[in-house]
Image 1 (cartoon, rainbow, N blue to C red):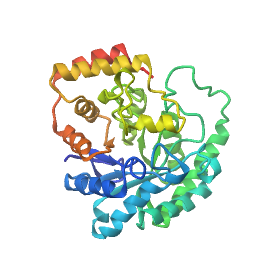
Image 2: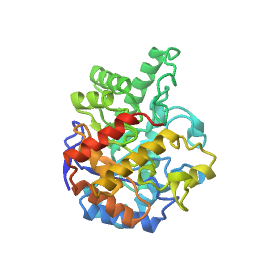
Image 3: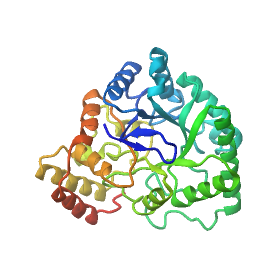
Amino acid sequence: MEYSKLGKTGLDVSRVCLGTMTWGRQNNEAEGHEQMDYALEQGVNFWDTAEIYAVPPLPETYGKTEEIIGMWFAKNPSKREDIILASKIGGTGVPWVREGAPITGKEIMPSVDASLKRLQTDYIDLYQLHWPNRPFAHFCQNHAGMLDYTNVNAAKVEDNLLDILRGLDDAVKAGKIRHAGLSDDSPYGIMKYLHLADKHDLPRMQSIQNEYSLINRSDDPYIAEVCALEEVAYLPWSPLATGMLSGKYANGAMPEGARWNFEVEDGRPLSRRTEEANKAVDGYLGVAKKHGLDVCQMALKFIDKQNFVTSTIIGATSMEQLKTDIDAFDIELSDEVMSDIDKVYRQFPIPF
């Protein structure tokens, strides 16, 4: 296993980050613990969770993933120091989390305390803001013209960001979190937080995790530039586009137990299921077949090869998937493979 620096923290995190969001809905506690045991054996020391998990989120599964991780720590207390643990405070719009209210400074400490209780630990290494309170171009809103920023009050946004940083500062000083990070944010958000932190001597945003995959590369080059020049760790989530890149949803298929079934059951739109996205997946499947590669491993290794990526967040519902995903980081992609991938990308740069 290879490791990278997490921003300017001095922490060395594995190039593979263990995503946990299925634990508590698609996976039970025993399965989650088996994944944790195996991942740690393979040198995966970076684990990511969130208070709203399991996903797709429901009121009855709120906090379940953190509880599963907490039970593992309770059984393996000596291993807590081996793990770089990341969690998140949920943003606005989830009615069963703080009644859907936005993130504010005063909400940081109670949310941290609740996560610590579920996680059965005294500290969180990286505490992230799950998404901004303001409009943001993620969750399938990457096309031009979808968001109107002209009605956003910049002064109020800045006041809110400063308030949040002060709340994070209180949690750092209390020893409850070590570092802070972002999720689903933009170049504006990263730079504004960095500026405010420097100006007011408050915690620096050390990382950002955004959706990034072969069929969603919208963070390159803009987020990539900020992360590279400002030494902010980039942590791509959903590297297989919620499983779409595996080809399992081809031709309208909905395999039993697959995530999209849960999305449909919960009444959520399948925003990634577009004609262009299906064509892009077909293209990448063709590249993998041509070169004798597993398409999921090809997709994961492609992300790992991007020079602005710090650690890729993987997720699996079975041990077979987990082993395949972790093994992907040991393969090599030839120049010919990379060239063929680029040809598909140029045909379908923003397919959803």
